Image 1 (tube, one colour):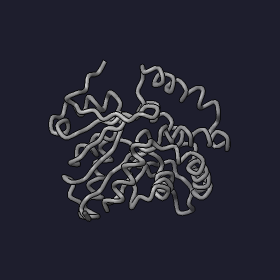
Image 2: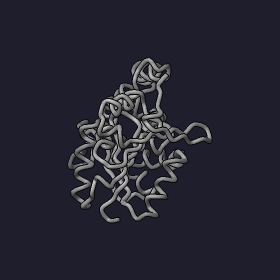
Image 3: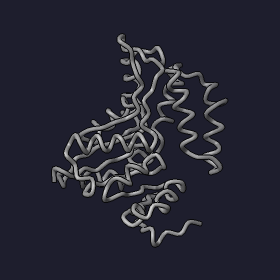
Image 4: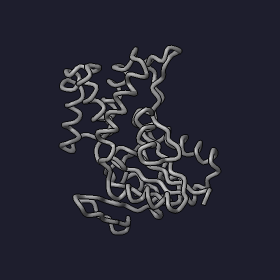
Length: 242
């Protein structure tokens, strides 16, 4: 079993909400981000997404843009302290399905790896909380004095996640045809595409369309939807979008 891993996204896949939003709110309370930024720049994108006339990725991208500039010049230790508080307060808000799948993979002896667009400091703490073997997240770069520079190496897009999965496969000698991946948005498509067992967890319409248009992924993918206290398993042959 040493050549099998399970790759998990975090936001919307393990965690029931968007971690970036919770981190953003904590930064407002800590006066790292001006509250006006939320109302003038982020909330309009949130409202569009909440009303399903905009995309989650656009909303997330706006938060990430403001976050990048807000932490510039701050010391790594200070930001990590705030991140730890957010994970301690919110980290247990996981979907039952993915929480049980993490347990199942661990019992099978599979490697557990999370690849997420959230800041790497947050991904690291979530990986520790859930007992993952390794992780990769968005890297907000620091200088020789451990101050954030404002430069960022993203992990929220599909291209970056593809590179990350291949890196992990080489690092651990994984057979990707035997591996599993769990994701919910278009940014997770390449991760799902590369493995033999792709699972779409509460997927966005955009991700469903991407998989539908790729026959190779479509024929091996499954959809899982968790709503309230019910978990639904859906095959693409059964799926009907309304």
